[in-house]
Image (cartoon, rainbow, N blue to C red; front, side, top):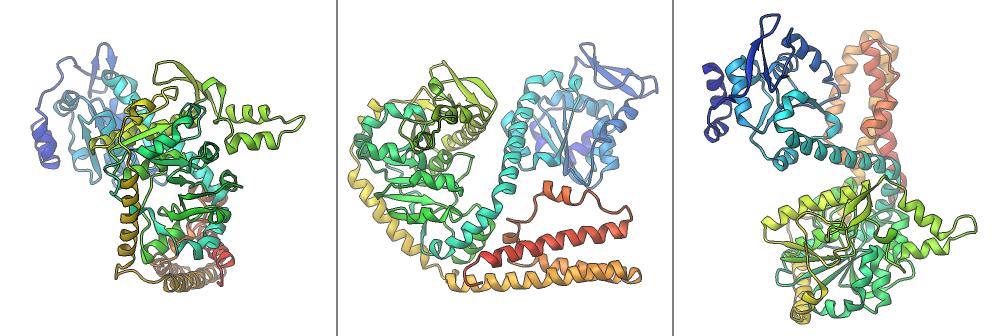
Length: 597
């Protein structure tokens, strides 16, 4: 016990100051059949009654060091599992989570933790809240985490660990959606980015509005069915707040003779671009992204400004020519709208029509481009109702609650958006930004409070403040462009082409070396050394990150490499060939789509 406490104090001095050494009195320590100690609480054994160490060795066999980045133990009994892991996997991260420090100190009293405390990559979350633990685990890809959860060991904090697991599951779902989207649309995004490149170089970034709107309320107009109750008041609301419309709700705004101050369209798909088809808003600023469908840049409006690109090529150019300003992407354009209001420094953000569900089984506000398209392409055997029902049933449905406590039909996609807002709103409130809903018929999100149009209309008219807001943004844009560390777009473009050419040359040389290694077994060690040097040069290339957009995902790469030879050397050669071939393919795809490449 004393040695364990000394090691704990030495390894985690700050935790040692916070937590008092106090074991749990309700845990009974017994001797297992093999002579080792085991423990139980309320008749629930933490470990085997026969051989706790053998049980733990079998448990950690589920960890695959080649595929997983970290092991996470939800509590740990006396510590047999973490000890077995620490001895076997010395280079992988070991994360221990325990809500109740008394259970931790009981383990220190009963089992030798020296191997665990001496593990180089040990992380101990002791007494952390659900949100703190969940937030920390989001630093890792969920597919790279191996969760060890023994029901008996977790029973004392059952709800706590279940809440963390729920958060991890939501992260996993989001990662799966992101991976699937990347695999499906990466080529489209590359083409869009390349075609838009000359246009995006001329656009200001949203960072010119940063912290300039602290004295004004912001209202976000999403396209849920409940927006309809707010639309008649839009002209008066616009006098008292900055109006931000998602792309799908713009048509409804224009039909009420109101042009929002900002329209946000971030989605690169062609279907998203169609939301602006045949519309114009010459007094609105369009906030978009460099990878959107090119026709978006032909939308008639006051000005087009960019948020920082979500994709590698745009990020490459921003590093050299100037950042645009990051906006969060939580799966819904409403998340980007909300984050833009936060970037502007808003202290009050009001949301209308963000239903995250289907009030009266409606999907979008009547008259939205989404609904109009359904009617336009309606056929005898594929009616508008069939189209809309198909959307309604395209993800698992469940009953949620609105802000009034009434039931509302929602689905798994919407729950992910709600999860994003819940976390973002909580952080924003700590920094002085409150979020309200004007449509309590929407799915309730913890942290968002109910307000009303009537209360909003009691606020002062801010027409003059808005004018000054836009004037200040124009001045700030000029200042941002005067940064001496930035280079011209033309020079950045030339550097990018040079980097692509160099990357192509390295990939071709590497493939040639792989071929030589297959034909000359006696020279393989020499060739492997040359490939290692080439790898270093490739990793140093400024264009390598851009190539990652159309490089296979981890899931796709696993499929490409599932039939490699068993011989270690041949396996390495074939794996290298696959990687260099895909890299060469990615570089050539860029060169094919870039103007004047």
